[in-house]
Each structure stands twice: as structure tokens, then as C-alpha cells.
Image 1 (cartoon, rainbow, N blue to C red):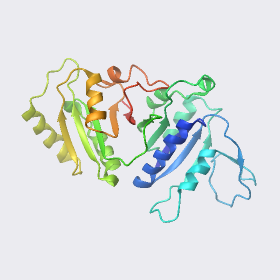
Image 2 (cartoon, helix red, strand yellow):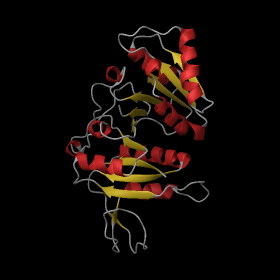
Image 3 (cartoon, rainbow, N blue to C red):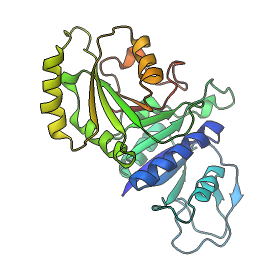
Image 4 (cartoon, one colour):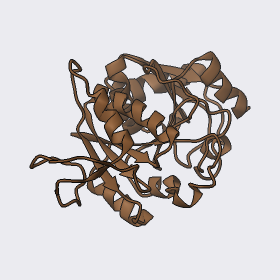
Length: 280
């Protein structure tokens, strides 16, 4: 069973991201693991039935603190939906990054999700989990959700890569994510620095033989990007082509030019849609 991990810092951005993560979990049939990076806004659950799973390290007494987001997600598990994700919860406020990384890898997490603020909140700066450090040492991708992005169905995803080094396992993963929505999945080729552009005919041949024949998905598309101004490229992908998710690989090709050297506590201002980053 797949598991989607949600980083919960008790912020409105975390709740916003959790709602989208819940939708993904329903679509791909995954369970949810909430990681609380600080003390939760405590509510009390009484008479927890034997076998209930809220925190793996808990002694199951009559009372147990549960986050507001946990309650909110449970309220979304309405009757009539085809799949109801199970929701687990961990307090990682006392954990260091190495312990968090071990938790992620031990539980075979399929995706990590984090809501991103517009600005860094001074009150929460000391409690922020270094997601770049975590991403460097796990096997699953990280989905970053901008606070102003309106929740919606996924219709289009775009994976930015040099086609000559396009990772088939990434495309297969994206096809699994896109399939429940029957969303279009585009490979946007941008030549890596120092490499020549690909002729259109040759690029289409490589796309057909190396990508399409190795990925079982009927909504695969290809774009050969010639524009060198990355700010223009990102603007067109988001505002003209209306992609719902941008996809990149950590530290590969144009990642640092678009995102910066590291993933920080905020996204670049021009990234106004969710950004899915795969580990290098």
C-alpha cells in the first residue's frame, strides 16, 4: 500500500497542502502519514478502540492528542467515496533530520507533501524541517504546494529535463500519478548547459523509442523547448500551457537556475503551481 507523508507545522499552508494530498491519496489509493513538526493543537480522543492506529509510538490509553488537520482530513472521508485513506500520525518535534529520514525510508513513503508559505514566519523558523536535507537522503519525491494555488483536479503535468537523460522511472511514476485523472503528461526537453539543442525530428524519434515504448500511458506528450530564458519558460508552462504540476529532479539540469541551489522555506515567486521534486 502506498503512503503519502504530509509535513504538518500547524499552519494554514499545511492544511491547504494536506487537502490536496488527501485528494491524491484517494485517487492513487494511498494511506496518509501526518508528521507533526511542533506540538499539535491538542484535542482529545476518548476510548480509542483496540487496534486503532494514531501514533506508532503511543501507548493506547483513553486519551491521545490529535492534530486539527487529522480531524479535518477525517471529515473528508465521507460516505460514498470509493477509497478512504487511513490516517496515521507521528510527533517528530523532538526528532533530528536523520531520524526523520529513517522514518521516511522505513515506511516506504511514496510521496512527501509540504505547504509553502509566501514569507518565512519568524515564530516558526526554528521549528522548520530542512526538506532539502531530507530529500537528499530518501527515495521518494517531494511535492511543494504554494499557498495561493487553488485546489483542483490534475489536468496537466510537465517534467522538465534534457530528453537525452530523461529518467524512465520518473516518467513511470508520473504516469501513475496522472492516470486517475487521465491527465496529460508532457516531457519538456531543455538541453543541459553545454549540450547542443536536439533537432525536432531526432528528438521525436528519441521520445517515441526511448520514452513512449517504455512507459504504458496514452497521454504522453513532448515539447522541444528552444527558449533559453528560464523565467519565460516557467511563465509559459504555468500561465499559457496551464500545467498544474511542474516536475524536476533535484540538482539536475536547470533545477538550480529555476529553484536555486537549495530548497528553502519559500518557493520562487514565479512558481505558482505545485512543484514535484525527485531525489537525484
